[in-house]
Image (cartoon, rainbow, N blue to C red; front, side, top):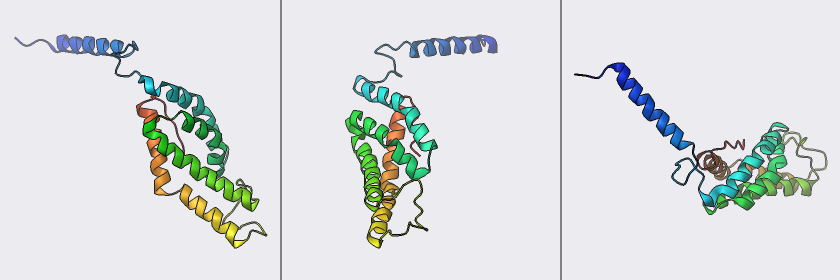
Length: 162
């Protein structure tokens, strides 16, 4: 004799409830718990999530990344070994652009490559262009993707960097 659909559904629901209840208890056997070696970093991800979102929303793509740099530096300082290199790439590329803009005396919020400010010499423009190309390179994109994936998978916190 086959069990009725209601009995099977009831049993499946009971199993699901038991599994969900066990998943939220936070014990050492919790598959959703953040591993000890990532806890400080994940706490920093949660702390920096809002400032990064605000910084990116407050300016253009480049100036937003520059505004988010202090948060990125905090995250890089707490980064576990498996993503420390990615954070290093991100921070370094933004720093390089900031340095090029500062050396040229250019405001990142108003700089327009197609219409550069008067007095910007070709070497300064080339330095800004090189730093901007490096910032939007596939290497930087892969680094950003890696730290975002880590935040989602390990920290269970979305971290939008672009």
